[in-house]
Image (cartoon, rainbow, N blue to C red; front, side):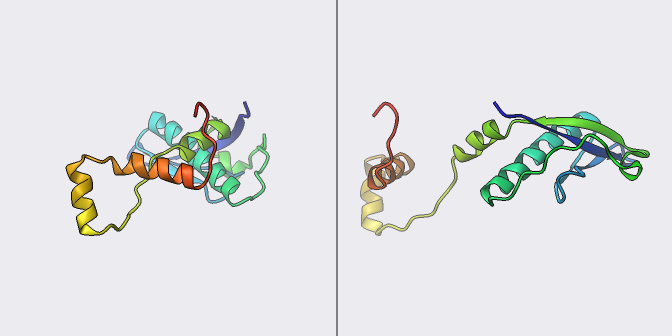
Amino acid sequence: MLSLTYLAVFEPSTDGSYSIYFPDLPGCISVGDNLEEAARMAAEAASLHIYSMECDNEEIPSPSVNLSKEDTEGNIVMPVTIHPELFRMKKDNERIKTNITLPAWLKRIAEEQKVNYSRLLEAALIDYLQIPVPGR
């Protein structure tokens, strides 16, 4: 399983919170109320950033091992390891809401029959798109 480790810069604030950024991942930022939460948020932010880059077919930057004095001075630098394949699987299998439109009479009958719209639509789409499902 592929893992990537990027150096995260944690900038302390006077209230005890931390702003986070990754010099190797421009635009990837986050914040945490304390160092422990900031470390979790950094991993989530980096995972989501890499996932978005993959979705956009962008080249994934190689992690660097050295940071500038500007990045390190007065800050905490911590390696953050992410697992893009696991994150992609999680994101791709998340349940999301979608809106549909039905005639009122059909909705009434379906509700009387206690139809699970999500399950029915998922099965219908899999069949309609002829997507092979393991175990079927």
